[in-house]
Amino acid sequence: MKKISLSIDSLRQIFRAGTHTYPARDWYILVAITVVLIGASAAWQTWTYVQVTAVGGSETSATSKPAFDAEAVGAVERTFMKRKEEADRYRSVYHFVDPSR
Image (cartoon, rainbow, N blue to C red; front, side, top):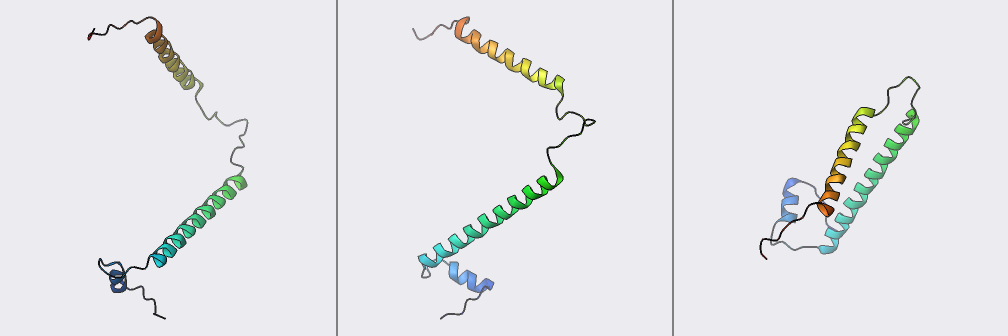
């Protein structure tokens, strides 16, 4: 059995163009890296969830400021109403003439 070496020269030799390839080995490496990344992602998500729930992330006190500004929300709603009214006008009021006819 060959000794596995992870030096720069051995990696260059493995990935050099024209050398003999081992597809099964390459797939095993790819699957192993994928499993490690998915495991790391799951661990990170679990750690984040535990940290947020330990602090009580969504609790608010009576003295805290609201998470949004009511005036800004009203301005956004007005903007979307204007856009909806304009879209309705394009369907019913505005008439376009096809210049190719």
